[in-house]
Image (cartoon, rainbow, N blue to C red; front, side):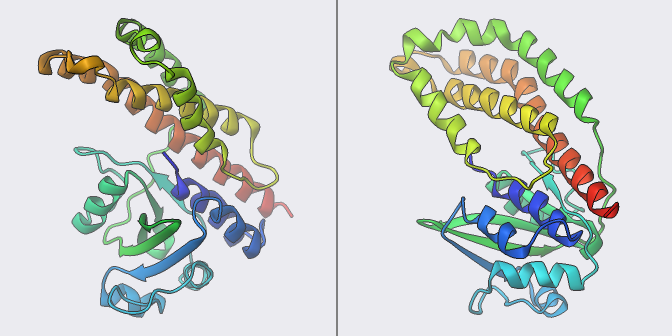
Length: 264
């Protein structure tokens, strides 16, 4: 699936540190949609950041970036929540609910906000800014550890994936997986993006595409509900490892780009 939140976290952080021009950041986000709208979830957030509320005419991304800088933001981070695991979203029920539905969010702790993208029309993404009542420290996972965990989870899930025999049961599946990976490959990154982070993001995209196809694959509707549940449970650790790898890669990119900007 597209991850505009990852693009926002990296480019937004780079811009906040003076390592990227605002036009470059906006161009990178344009990969995911031709039009981007911005609204605040509640009146208090709208007033604090000088952004339009939900019932007002939506603002633009450039205004959101400027508002974050004015609010003292320094870096942003990617959060990929799932039902039952909404860590990093500051205890906000409204933010967590929207983020789980979107399967992604950007958290900007210094500004006390979380931002969730939602596709509201063809090639239109609306970014809703939520209050982050209790910003929590990022749960940092070293990129090497996350990469290792992904490799381990892949080995452990190999038998389950092999038992699905997707290639024989679903014609054209290799092309389908390739197309899903290509969606992630559309992302544009700043100069200086660490190569290891890019490699981990690529591998996570490939594994995620396989998982998505595996989750949808039910040839002829023959898979029983109990078998489907066992399959889901067997593949869940791999899905969790993909989430962790993606977040770790984005964290590493933000760290490297921010450190580089700080030395210049």
